[in-house]
Image 1 (spheres, one colour):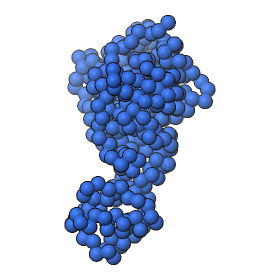
Image 2 (cartoon, rainbow, N blue to C red):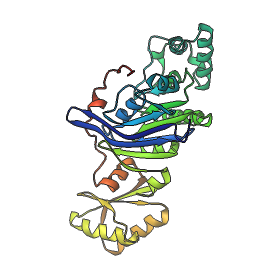
Image 3 (cartoon, rainbow, N blue to C red):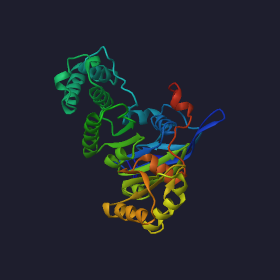
Image 4 (cartoon, rainbow, N blue to C red):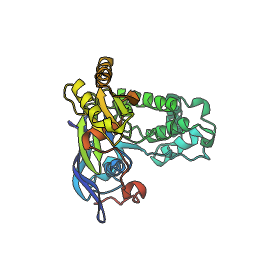
Length: 330
């Protein structure tokens, strides 16, 4: 397969006057998870659609499994599985029937499609619900069935486009376990998500996209180091103290400039000792706080640190109105 199972070089995608992707580079090593982070409308789904051969780039090139996604689209499709943001299973069919149906579409015999369905339902903890209609499944069960459906053809490369959208923490954790199992078996995964925590749990490498451009890349540890493993938000009781508060925080963090908005300052920290130093510095300055909140670093903190603005959704026509599947070029 070569050095990279997935590679994009300068991808550009335009919709009329709107540029959804503006020179995006991506690379995923075989048997790893590449996390693509960004807010709604940043260009994540547009990238996935191009890599999955559902949309042609306006510019640039992309390769999946060493094959050009435009010139060798049929070969690429034989290697990949795709799970979108919303469950695509037929609610009237049972779990077994959903997977058998896909197996038959892929050219499997009836016995082989049934064996594959039973194998996947067992692996995904759905064997007890195999004969029940999908409409009776919980949200987490539907997402697992949807993921199982993308694996019927045993793909080498899997695209997961915000697969945990709408799931509760327990169901999200269950899906994470499934992804880990797949990667342990050698599958390469490209995962799009809005959550730094999710990418931190699963990804070997991370690319952050904003308004169709890559603004950061690295390992989870490298990315979190931009803002710290945790995020500390401090809001003064008196808005007039905001400048002094920012200076006190910067001084206690060896000159690190905190991110700030019109009400509070936010700074990344790596351990308990650092937030205690900040608290002591603020107290020494006589600044009263109305908020002192410590939490895990989020994608929003990364965006605020990198761009100076929060990770607000941007308009992306491809995400709002996906293109119909395009015919393969000869």
